[in-house]
Image (cartoon, rainbow, N blue to C red; front, side):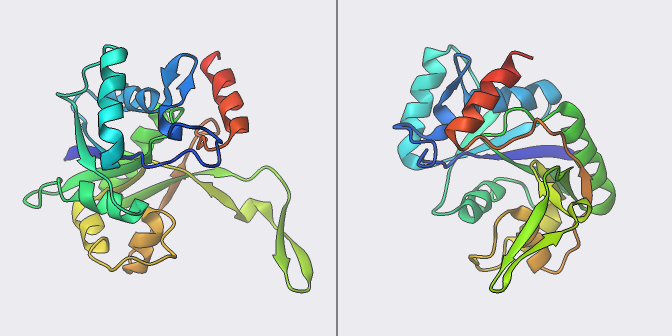
Amino acid sequence: MRKYVIIVAGGKGLRMGSEIPKQFILVAGRPLLMRTLDTFLAYDPDLSILLALPREQMEYWASLCEKYAVDYASRVTVVEGGATRFHSVKNALDRVPEKEESLVAVHDGVRPFVSEKTISTAFDEAALSGCAIPVADAVDSIREVTEEGSIVRDRSKIKLVQTPQVFRSSLLKEAYRQDYCDAFTDDASVVEAAGFKVVLTAGNRENIKITTPFDLKVAEALVKL
């Protein structure tokens, strides 16, 4: 089956305290988003990438590509993002053909350290079961805050959700025909709301979502490994 990946990059950098959107912040001299794209381009030379960007960021992205002398034109299709992550994915998903079944991954533009093993495992599982959600184990103690206080939870039963989340195209398209709901936090939640079951696969601990200044320091360290 043909493979697609939708890269969602609509952040504004508010939690990062940055004047530029977080996906364009430099990590070891290279924009985060470019590092993410390069990871997927290295994974599979035949992968079709759909990059969802807000319209107002497209010109800046083009200037970055020129500045860093990279030509993604033949491998990356830029599509206009929407008001929410849900709508950005939906817009990109419209570019995936209806005619034949394919595999569609959805990945956060600010997760540049996803491993090739995590990507390939998710694609392999989605080809078998229809969906795959990479997760990592929780390592800290977990407490749930309630009106009465807080309750210790068994961390062995808690998983930290990552991306890319991979689905058969027909399943994902059906799920995205639903109306938007505030409860949709990722693609897995959209798919589950449509009545489908999700399957968990192994992620990698380094596959962090870079959203805060602290995350940026971790990213700088990871580049040097």
